[in-house]
Amino acid sequence: MPLTPDWPGLRAHAMRLADMPLRQLMVADPERARDFSLRVGPIHACFARQRYDRDALAALFSLAAPLPDAFRRQFDGGRVNRSEDRPALHTALRSDLGHGAQAEAARRSARDARDRMAAMVADLESSDITDIVNIGIGGSDLGPRLAVQSLAEFDRGRFRTHFLFNADASGVQRLLPQLDPARTAVVLVSKSFGTQETLLNGGILKDWLAGRGRLYAISAATDAAIGFGVPADRVLPMWDWVGGRYSLWSAVGFTVALALGMRRFDELLAGAADMDRHVLESPPERNLAVWHALTLVWNRNVLGHATHAVLPYDERLDLLPDYLQQLVMESLGKTVREDDSASPVATVPVLWGATGTSSQHSFFQALHQGSDPVPADFIGVVTPAHRYPQSHSAVLANLLAQSEALANGSAGSSPQKHYPGGRPNSLLLLDALNPRSLGSLLAMYEHSVYALSVLWGVNAFDQWGVELGKRLAGSLLPVLAGERPVDAVEDPVTRALLGVIRARQAD
Ligand code: F6P
Image (cartoon, rainbow, N blue to C red):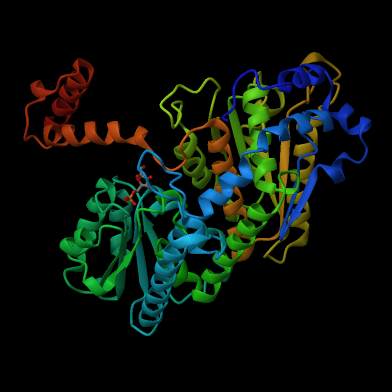
């Protein structure tokens, strides 16, 4: 049963703990740092700086009762995407844990696609192509771009990779002079093959190639891709049972495989598979995704925090907050439940963030002394990939210090120098950043998102909220192109603004 505001006992626990300094929780329970931590493969997770104690946690974990069955249903190909009547089988792209015909068929398709992709990677490697341009947006861009950027140490240097992901053509204009069309492979990634931004950039690049270089597509709409001009033997599949924001593990990762090689791409999948097994087979109290999701419920629904920060202390993970914004907010940014009832509890917090240590010199002031406590996930990497140990020690020192300072605070010599503390945060420490650990980390967030969707009763796999804007933009396009009169626009504000734009453009 989804969460209701009067869920037994949770509020009473929160009130009991409301005035207790977080530091006091540590003193009262010296084993907390150990017992509120979990080790899963290359990830050490610490929840000791959350505003709950063992009794509150026991009450919180009573919410987890439906989760083991829900995970099983998702892995086995249950139609967990109810509004579109589909399974969500991204786990079949990397794990063999799903039972039944649906999951088996999905695994077979995934294996075939992976093998075709490997052959295409090998073919490109032996060609004279030097540059890969990945064109996509949202889930067809963020996952590959994050993986290529954060795993740059593993890039074999065989290709230069580029990403075009915005309707704004500034990126195209900047990129094209650097490329030779005869030596460029353009990869169009679009599940629907109907996304405006991707088709715009794809059209420009196709014309620029003018039959030279190579054009590839990754899509569930094979016919549309072929109709666009992509040779049939250069189209790799997607399927309606994989959501865009869960699709990195499919051929959507083609550019990742080209940059890192198939062996590293398979390691990324293996890391996600490690997390899949952990999540499917661990009891809630030892299950990292469940801890993570319940902690978010505690902060959002019981303590009432409206935003949540993701703070990676590693420049290579610069894109992680963006990636998680799509994963978390496109999946859970809903207030109508799957049964069409309005959710009686708040759902997704606004997720935001940026890398430390630089963000300490921008928004951390507000995290320490602003009026709204912001729960945070600190993400650290124990072993760096560079040869500057002193710099790395500085990064880790700052990461640990900020987590501690936000939680514990400090009495000041004056009110303005007082640090209230009591700002809850979790730490996720990776042994090192490599394909396997990145795969595990991203899969953990995917499972946490799904657990939250079950607890809130919303569908994590549709995104109806983005359609209205797309529709309106489609109707305004002919007006901006001068093919329809401004007067035909119904909304008076849009009409007035179009008038201003038209007038300025005519100047
Ligand atoms: O933003 C809406 C959305 O449909 C995302 O869910 C998706 O990742 C993105 O657009 C791109 O869609 P497509 O892969 O179909 O081009």
